[in-house]
Length: 152
Image (cartoon, rainbow, N blue to C red; front, top):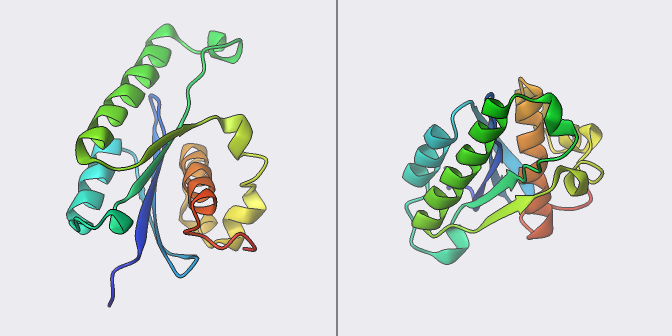
């Protein structure tokens, strides 16, 4: 079996993080791995993609956490955990030299709908809403950078 062209890691940080790795080849998702621990996902992807070639480097998309009216309903501890987790992921990804983008949910959700997640064949692998949000970010990044076929 030939390895997939690119791995895209999507992370929805927080007290109950959603983490998804999409393995993409030929414009399609060929495998979906889900995690509840961002560090486990980053380590698994690093072990599977030990290529020094820049075009084989994994991409990472993290939902940008914005402190606003909606976060007032969350606990302060949960908000701080989310911020700390996102910063730690940022540092871990930078140390690996992988491309990273923080993406606002408001930009991603209108483009990567539930129907689009189903068309890419990832919906059935996603157990939680946090994993669905993480998958939206990974698909968005894949579409934006040409790893996924936009007509799907």
